[in-house]
Length: 414
Image (cartoon, rainbow, N blue to C red; front, side, top):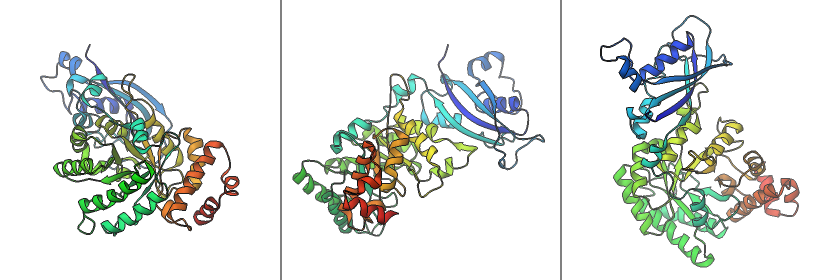
């Protein structure tokens, strides 16, 4: 019996749910809007998708997709569909075309959210997954325990290479573990990639000579595939220890091509994710979407943050992080380090640790570091102390009584 892959959805429909589910399965395998002569029983048995489960759940009562057909009330269903692997082979681009193709366009679909992917072993044999992941990132940053304390170069754009290097100098002096470019800063004429990387690495190497530990700098190499490969080689030759890409900009094939040649950890930014995931009953759930990128080979992946500046509720953020830390396959874990960012300060350390129960993460604070009233070094120190208190079970206010920088952080960010 051929191996099969599976996708799970939340389906909303205003008509017969079984018919809607079968329409989804047929549209994305051997069927079409009318029976055709060559779709005989043997072909259906060999190639058709199967509705494996259809279970009613509470409907949220929210508006449906425009153009939804049917006269009855809207109902919601957990839907599981499987396909024979021989339809597409272990191919991520063709997997996406199958599980997320012409589905939300169907009139019978009033809403469809892809919540989970289950893939057989051939996918893990075809795609290498993360080369570094959690263990490799800890080794390169020299952070054996606790979160990797990081920051984002701020302001996002507008600095020159020299201005960026000056900020990095302060951050390295303050004991930061990880620095990333903002996703808006790539290779503009005011701050070109090569000049920025060279200026920043000169600073990082100088501090590494002093401390024996090299700060990880995820320099943004997002661009065309040939540009990314060239920039990767510059970073690797220049002593860099990470590269950053914007996933929705480079796409699966771009990321896969980069992973095949990369000798560095790939820091994956999810900017644009809200277009895919914000609508509660359409699009992708983050764990399913992240499965694609974990297979393709990212090492770190953004999950937003607790009490963030965006729309996402805390339980969704934590569910995303837990998914990245959970093995994808019994023999191929493909665990990825979650990156918490978006308005993070000393206040979110304790609730993040309490909810996640792990310090396998990068805790990235931009303004939460550089806007500290006592300076950048105090911003780094206050974040580290906030996390130490969280792991030790010491309330933040109590820890701040013996720490001026932590108390100043509380006053600054409250």
